[in-house]
Image (cartoon, rainbow, N blue to C red; front, side, top):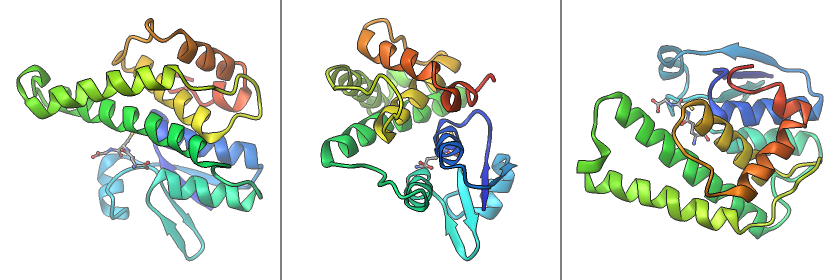
Length: 185
Ligand SMILES: N[C@@H](CCC(=O)N[C@@H](CS)C(=O)NCC(=O)O)C(=O)O
């Protein structure tokens, strides 16, 4: 089983955490954008090859790894909803990050202003949610954690208005599979 990705991608990090937790044998193949454009139809990382199976999205990879370990990706719709909402924040923040890197001023593009507003309303909702504060962490909490870790690493979001999200992130930092996969580790 081979996981392709970079050490800074939060989606890749989530998959690495799941693989470490599973105890499955896997090879990590460091992959740059040129290689992911050549090797994955989504032209993104992560992607995974496991025998005949080729997976090109972190959620498919997580479902596969969790399935092999005998645990569902999510136990109920409300955990899935938290997982999706944290992913929405991450997708949106990364979109704005790449736009800013290409010199686009988000303040003058109405859709990008909506993207910014989406982050604010989604974080306000996530702040109200019940988070797991000790292991075992569910995949919604892990997705929240990799989102916060990435946003802090890239200095994209100020989390001071969200003390409960910060507390969940602190709890994750005491968990070795999370702490050992930090983007600057
Ligand atoms: N929905 C995808 C998102 C993956 C993603 O956006 N990966 C980023 C790295 S953090 C990427 O490869 N971006 C390259 C690009 O957008 O061109 C997943 O969950 O795997």
